[in-house]
Image (cartoon, rainbow, N blue to C red; front, side, top):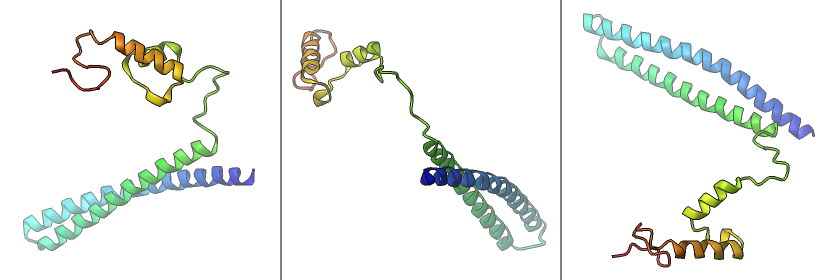
Amino acid sequence: MLAAKQEVEDALTGYLLGSEQVERLTQSEAAAKRAVELSFVQYREGATDFTSVLNAQQSKLRAGDLLASTRGTVALSVIALNKALGGGWQIRDGQDLVPAETRDEMRARTYWGSLLPPEARARDVDAAAADTTSGRGWHWRWWWPEW
């Protein structure tokens, strides 16, 4: 119980702190972009050399990389929070995960091999054998195109 609470708190803290950091880094990246523009203007006017432009571009690149990394960390914190809270589980009340109509359509298109019980595999193989004249150019037994 305490471990679950800690997971939730850690994920929340990571999300909140990460969100604040994303805001600050967004401002930092905008400032770095402006610095690149200003250094380029200064270079064009002859007030400075191209090294200052390159340094400003490197700073902008580092700010952009850090922003992207932090956004990824925030996304991971949201995923961790969802996982810690038990998200993603759907109550099905004894219902199958895949509806019967979808399962029948999937059976008609796919050979499931050992993933289905033997009676279902036999039914699927029989259905595939009956469908060799559909004109699709595939022979059901060999899985190679007919020549």
